[in-house]
Length: 102
Image (cartoon, rainbow, N blue to C red; front, side, top):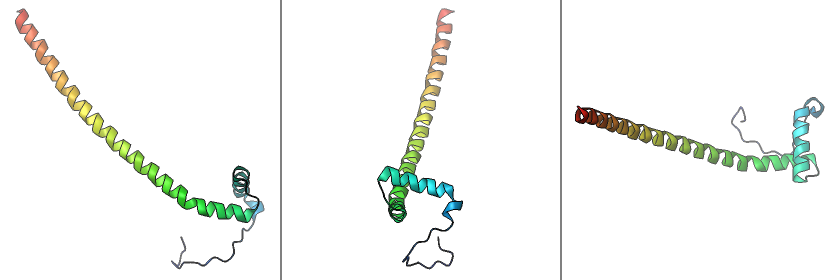
């Protein structure tokens, strides 16, 4: 995010001090190798274009995860309620058998 909230009209991109940023170089090399890209400029363009798709995919996964989380706890609550009812029924049956056996 840009500090002054102005949108920039990028004409060129300069990557400074890449020799001091081996992690970035490794990422760029990995992208070049996996995607068959030939230049650093093309890698940057690919990463920028891929960002939106990746962000949307991540958001979709996060939404699905939250939905599954809610479904699980809904199921768990229903299970607990049924379990309690069954436990109460078993206790009633046990009491009834005790009465019948006497």
